[in-house]
Length: 381
Image (tube, rainbow, N blue to C red; front, side, top):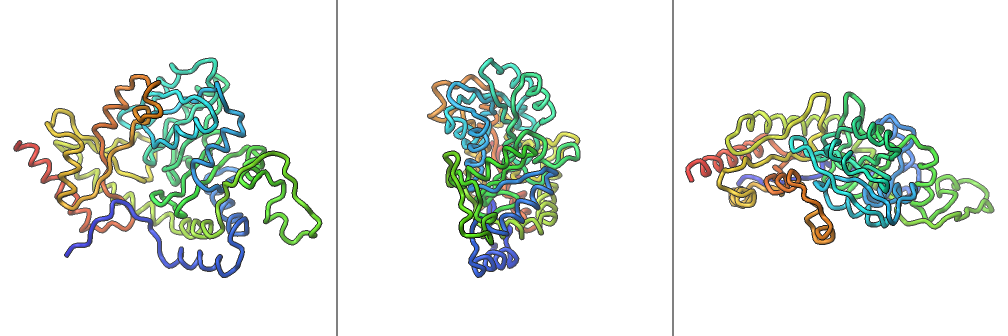
């Protein structure tokens, strides 16, 4: 019997298990040397001065917006085509999400449409490197500079991707990565903020730990009367050294992880080129995709809905997920949502195929055969 195909799966091995166990045995499981090393290595990889580990992408983005003073009455321009956390975090600080359209070929924010939505209340533009494909950060950055705005890059899915040869992570005022189980480098859960802004990094480290002026790691080995203070109200948004140790093991395997994902994506791309039913993803010149996800678009006028295709593939043993959601159509945002026809049609017609470093050639063959069978059924209907 063939092994069931996993839609997504962390690429863990003994190295990650031993790294976590070593931290447990050490007794220093939070705020310690593994976290410091993980932050240093990730910052170096992204070509920035600072990386700050946090408990999730959401808490990281919240802290950045909070430190920037974004709050009630302020507007943040954001694509609707994104996981809802991107939009929720704007509301968490009391600000107003202003939804922008996408480029339907890349699924990323359209800089021209973002420009049309700038008002006197706009403070931040938050592009999303959707599915791991870098956004047009140069256009967004130029737009922000002309209007005196900040750019927070939602690179939740984009660790390891490159934009015109530059690593994602150092191309905006601040970038936030996710370390969730479906991401390229995962610690199970967690996030990482990268920036060249030293004052921002200092406050991020303080606020993630209840506003403490002196970290546990900095305090280690000092005289017991070297007390910390709490100059501002902070939060508990820490990531553990257990997670950091797993992240370090993942960084050691990053080249292999990316190579495996790109090989899977290349087979999909070759098979789906000119496909009668599905449109494969488009990668513009100069962008290096990490293939965190593989999203295809159902051609219009096939006579089938996206959901019908997903159900038929499920019956064949092929797991899929719907494409990226249109956040502005969800209940908390629907009452104030603009009309975004490109976003809405993209959300309705896209689905994601299985992709992860551990998927075998035989399993991918089964996916491709199932896609062809469905295409034949549509053609004969």
